Image (tube, rainbow, N blue to C red; front, side, top):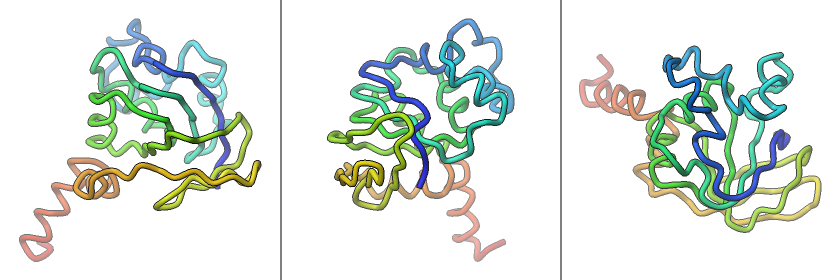
Length: 165
C-alpha cells in the first residue's frame, strides 16, 4: 500500500510535470529535482519526505503536450507511481520505455492521503473501502514495464537468448 501524495485533474501537461524552463537539464540523475517544480510536492520530494512508490493520481490525458522524456524520468527518479484515468499517447509510451510505473484506472476515486493498493486487476482504496478495475496494458508493453523499461527488457531478452552470458 502507498499514499496518494498528489491529486490532479485532467489535461496535466508535461510542462506541469517538468517545466520547460528546466529543459537544459536532461540527465535522468538530475531531472527529478524539478518534478512538479511549481507544486508544493516538489519541496517535499527534494526534502526526502516522500517515500518511493508514493502515488500521484490524475484525471484524463495525463502527460499531454510535448513529448519531453524528462517528464517521465523526473517522476521515475523519485520512484513515483502514476494512476490516471487516461494517459496521453506519447507520455504513456515514454513511461513504458523508461520503466515508470503507470496504471490506467478510469473510475478511480481517491483523495490526497488515501491509502491505495494496486493489484493486477484493480486499485483498492483502503481508505474508502472501494475497488476500481484497471485497464491492463498489452502483454508486450507490460513485460517492458515489469523489466524496468525498454533497455532493461532488451538486455534481459538478449541474455536469455544467449543462455545467460
